[in-house]
Amino acid sequence: MSDWKKTAAVAIIGGGIMGVSTAYHLAKRGISDVVILEKDLLAQATTGLSVGGIRQQFSLPANIRLVQHSVRVFEHFKDEFGVDINFRKAGYLFLARSEKTWKDFLSSVETQRKYGVTVEVLSPEEIKYRWPYLNVSDLKGGTFGPEDGYTDPYLVAMGFASSARKLGVRIKEETKVTGIKVASGRVEGIETTKGPILTPVVVNAAGPWGGDVAKMAGLDLPVRPFRRQVFMTKSFNAIPKPVPMVIDQDTTFYFRGEEPGLLMGMSDRDEPSSFNTHVDRSFMEKVIEEAVHRAPVLEKAKILRGWGGLYTITPDNNPIIGEAMDIEGLFCAVGFSGHGFQQGLAVGLILSELILDGHTHFDLKPYIYDRFGKVKQEGERKVV
Image (cartoon, rainbow, N blue to C red):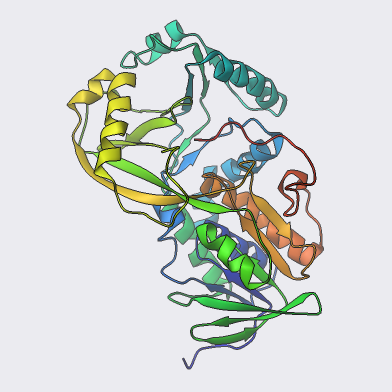
């Protein structure tokens, strides 16, 4: 407790990619009096359990732009942070079974190309030619982004955290925030399990717990956590490497390479919101069934292990980013609906600009915190 400091220029709640990216960008601008409060260990929850996908194939321009910024950082990560994150541009292959999904794909491609995304539109025959292990008998077609890929989320988060520390940021693990003090419409400080901190700025980057953190300040944000299960196979060489991220949009089943085997998963659309991260073996059987249907050779694969993580979902599948209009000094970055890791690099920059400059060059209209029930706008369609 001797190193506990009772004040901070900025207090960040959450030690995942959002928290460490925000802290780094603030410190890079000269604001090093920043503290990250993480109730467990850094990047052990949503970020560390992510499958690390990075893709520009979104349906909304704002989401495309966020990842485009992140991709530029990923490409030069070792130069800036001294960490080799093994960014593999194996591509993202989206598959459409239904006519509606196919039409959505084609509409999204127009938007993606308008914003400079390299994306190919493929017939079932072209898909079969390039990835012969796939069953295409029930497909309308697919889209492939050759500049998309995946990397190690934990290494990325640790790269940000290490650099932030070197710039003076304090990181307090196993420190739970228990309250946010608000007076006269602005933030004054926080309460934690290790003591209070007076601060004029609080960043809610608490991931699945973002709704609970917001309630500490009197905000009711429509963000809910949902379990997502991932399974890893034993060494598997029947599919040629590199293996792209293959996503069957209509079922949400996906798989990708992860040496020496494969990662695979799927959303359970019938599962209610919870903080449950246990592995359900009966659900694993459903994933295996979809896996064998889409790539019959996967019948030979053996599951090594599985784990559960949490997506934080909003009604329109878009995040909440920015300052709470009713509470000066309270900033939110929650509800990324499974895209937080790949968007977190840009969001950290955005939050630093909002905090230090009062504005950002990104268009945040799709992400304002009180948009729900007020302005009807299109949600993100490319969600699994």
